[in-house]
Length: 520
Ligand SMILES: Cc1cc2nc3c(=O)[nH]c(=O)nc-3n(C[C@H](O)[C@H](O)[C@H](O)COP(=O)(O)OP(=O)(O)OC[C@H]3O[C@@H](n4cnc5c(N)ncnc54)[C@H](O)[C@@H]3O)c2cc1C
Ligand SMILES: Cc1ncc(C[n+]2csc(CCOP(=O)(O)OP(=O)(O)O)c2C)c(N)n1
Ligand SMILES: [Mg+2]
Image 1: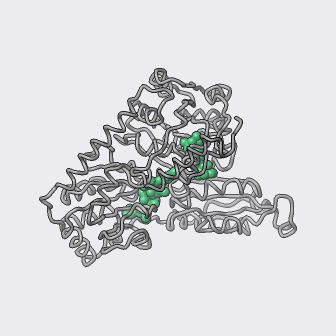
Image 2: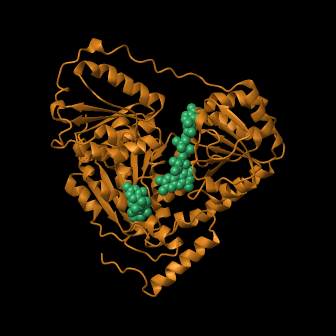
Image 3: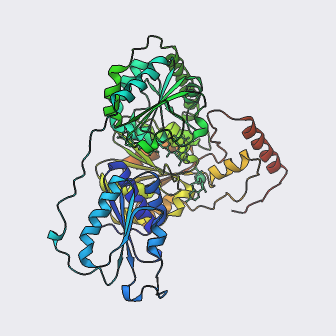
């Protein structure tokens, strides 16, 4: 049992553990406010389909219904977030309910919730009342022959195929690369699937969407067929109309959700690809792939200008790339939401057995450090690095004390731009001058030391490398608080005229003092 300072940290940590391992993770909160505090972390688990069991307290049954101290309708409150949601009515019921909850979390998958009135818990439950371990069978699901042939036809008839792969294809890297080789197809990754393939693999053209790369944007627009594997990529505005599509997903409900598909393959990513590959014809024309590779080289070269820049204030791209350079081959990255997500997506180069997790579906701030706590507890021998925004970090910074208490040598990198950077960017592309985004931060490195950890504040690029070396060598929880350029814009791969006009309008308004002047 790990005692956290804020229940949301516990729920995020559990969600991150479940996302990284695929195994059930458990978190707890008291009745009333403790239960309410869990919710955001549990929604993160729900939206990323992570198996999490949440246990909450409840007031004694004899007081229920009387607006008793801390009494809330916890079942009602948790109804939307959970796939299984029950109150324990008697101690004897508990073994059954726990097993049901676990089976539901794995099967659907998602959050199960059990609330426990104070008079019901505290009784002895005998071990034999638990049935045998529930059978969590993992069937090897493959689509039928007709569907496989339809998919093969579609892919064989297309000239230019792009593969969009997500976290559901994590165990299918070998098969993805075989398919890419036969189809002469570049592979672009949905963000939750960033760690399925090393970023320097010659078939990989980075990620797709707002945080994606320009080569991916071009390849997606130029292709005539999209092969989606283990992804529920939600940003449909980046999936062009008029393409044919083949989709592989273990969950039939997901197929056709984001884009109309010609061939639906319900099955496991690796097994389905293994059945599909013998039906594919080797394409001889590799011009589409070669163009994507060439575009990727130029895009990389452009990013490297920022990554290697000696400018002050430090470019966040330079910080992300430097961390990526010093990270261990087995590092686990835990990423916050904000502009910081953009730098993680583009400037971390995944290699070796590195993992990366983020709040994908919910896109919640403050995920980074709690996720790092969860990851370090589960994988104590791996290096664990959180990429945090200053806004996100400050939300749950009290739980740095938890990392200290349990001796968790996590590295927390704060991309400190003293503002809610992503919100400012969103305001400005809409033509709204910067409004209420600035933040009066403390020195987070000093804070780390006061808590009993260690830390370094970095303001100049010349100090960055040495600071990172100290962070990775430290055996204490460590905060690397780096001042990054507050004016760095998270440009999308391609800027629309509307965005550019909005941005210029906002800047002109800011110049003439329109909008709110903030004191920090
Ligand atoms: C600030 C911010 C910005 C973001 N911008 C972007 C962006 O620009 N681009 C982007 O890509 N993401 C972005 N995201 C993340 C995005 O919201 C989604 O979470 C992400 O794209 C989903 O990745 P995924 O498809 O790999 O995972 P999921 O959405 O979890 O989908 C995984 C799919 O795999 C299936 N599956 C599971 N197991 C198997 C199996 N064994 N075989 C076959 N299928 C399986 C599941 O049924 C599911 O359909 C952003 C997030 C944040 C916080
Ligand atoms: C819990 C939560 N509240 C609000 C938001 C909306 N939001 C998205 S990004 C962002 C700003 C993040 O700021 P910071 O953590 O400093 O990162 P930066 O964008 O500056 O890199 C906000 C407020 C959110 N995603 N999650
Ligand atoms: Mg910020």
